[in-house]
Image: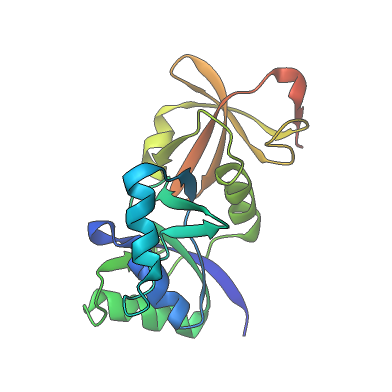
Length: 201
């Protein structure tokens, strides 16, 4: 069966717990995060937690040799899941009727109230920007971006965001690249020099 990406709003900041739940259902997930190196007492506490085999798996932490990183969400309470049509409808129903241990909802199409599949091109562009490690990223709810003036559709030619496509928008008096997952979320980069951009027809 064909699979698509869908967005889920998770209540009470339980995105990592939801990630484990969905992983246990053999579903691919994605949370936009940054990696923060833990030091001192935070490192020691994480090391103890990871060493406790009786504790449930905590997907917030990543071990790389002696180093431990903590994953911190870039967007509060948002997780993406890849699923087929039947699975996402079942998951949406379970969330709606509180049949799971964590609460939330699957983003729906405004007109039909069916789960809204995210076009692959939008998901790829969003992940490219969110995972780039570029400084100055700013996230907006989709309905917030309509107040910003929209310009040309462009592609980044150079730098860590090379290949990203989106629209130039004027945000806080600066021209920035905006990449959007319609109806869910958008991410704006910091200023990108015009010479690093090309118009997409």
